[in-house]
Amino acid sequence: MKDKGYCSQWAQKQTGVTPEAMAQQQSQTTQGQPKAGAGRGAAKGATAGVVGGAIGGDAGKGAAIGAGVGATGGAIRRRKQEKAATEQAQQGQAKDQQQLASYEKAQKACLQGKGYSVQ
Image (cartoon, rainbow, N blue to C red):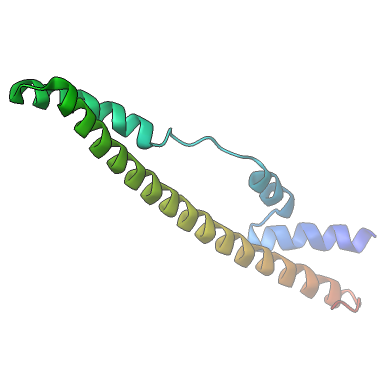
């Protein structure tokens, strides 16, 4: 229908929202920076532990202790990063929903102005 296309373009101009672009943007997955995990934390901790253990006279024991501490720290960092990413995604989704609702409201107003009954 010709009027629907017109009203779609009008709503885009009024709101600055392009639903097709929003859908495409949501479907794309972006690669973030590699997350610090337990494995990377363990490796760093083991390295530090070797040095500490060597000073104390037992590099192997120091490496084992350092690996455990590092793994724990890496896991905690990973959980914090995942939580932050989830919160950011939720905020983005809420913003997208508000923008889409604004677009739909404008499109509906246009169609009603042209005599259509829109629910």
